[in-house]
Image 1 (cartoon, helix red, strand yellow):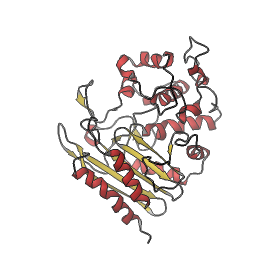
Image 2 (cartoon, rainbow, N blue to C red):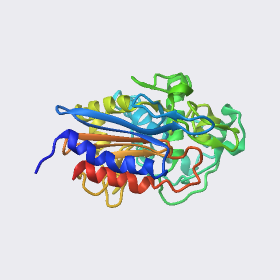
Image 3 (cartoon, helix red, strand yellow):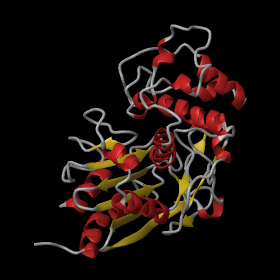
Image 4 (tube, rainbow, N blue to C red):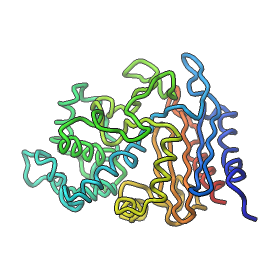
Length: 331
């Protein structure tokens, strides 16, 4: 028996309500869109619980964390490729000629734009760049000149930090001076934003300012820092679902078993659940955010939470929650 949008939404929202009621996450906003059928959005819980409590609303702004990679950096890199400014299979040195400039044979100088988009490089998965200082310009030089430890391909923020540096070099300005896109920004009014962590090195509860440590220290970066609402994300999702552009096609084109250009693709055990179409792409953010697009069924959904508020050191159950929501959306 087929079900309508409202029924599908209600089923998928149920585990979100349960997670909030159980105290696993403070609050959440869930949105579902089927172009031609409509969209629904609903909020539950609290946008902030310490030091003051504020309710979550559908208008709450979220620190989107790694959704920045797919909503900001990826489309800009693909636009440069479409305009002929870069070749995706050319090395980053096309725009960053000073990358490892003191060693002409360095492997970092051979890394391509496409490899970074698909996380097919040897860069380490995690690197606490912010612990090397708070001078943003010096940290950018550090990223470019460091002899990075080489390992097997892994999902790495370094890939998109470098892509962000390439964008900055091309435009001659910092990422935070660029247009974030309709409905998005690089900061938010704290009174309208979901709080994230009580930061141990910034000594305050973060709200309306970027949570990601490296992005904060760099003063803006290509891997994190974007803020937006559920409505803005669903607007972008509708454009992607209905736009048969070369960039969208590349976002859907596999580069590996788990990755496309920028996005993660459907595979066993992934965040979108096991019942989505094979052509589904998605991405998550460390702060508790996520967006998934099922092109086969013409459907997209977003789950935005503040699961790291007031600390990341707590099992929020976000991995299982995302998969449960995805399966109920597509069942």
